[in-house]
Image (tube, rainbow, N blue to C red; front, side):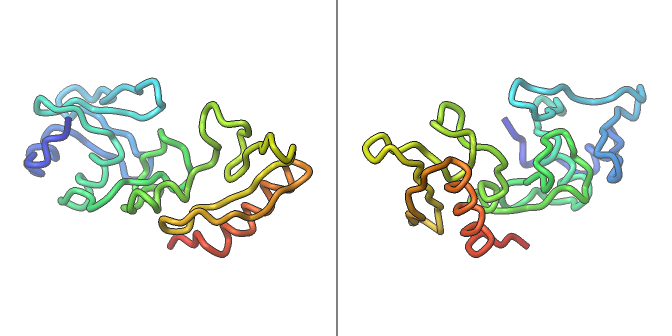
Length: 157
């Protein structure tokens, strides 16, 4: 999907990028570049390859591809302003999630229903370990336990 051998100068000569707004436009036509996929990320076709706009923005500004994943700090997948982007590991990117998994028993992060105890379970991943935070009467109490643990374990610079 990505052509990591793409020439930085070719990108600069074909596209304009606004670090302030995150918008890409074609230099030749002045039209907005890219389209949004069903997961809410903007993609731009260039040089026979398809690129996620946040990665392209990183490359445009830095002249080098990110070493990891490009995370949207505010969680808005369409906000490709450079100040909203950071190069993080996959684990660092997961720490910035705002919602639970689709199909989960709870939409809240770190919370799931325990049918055996009929209580809400709270847990957090720390490195490669899952830490059990407890069982709670309410979904909100379980989520609050998760958020407290997140403050301790998931500090992202």
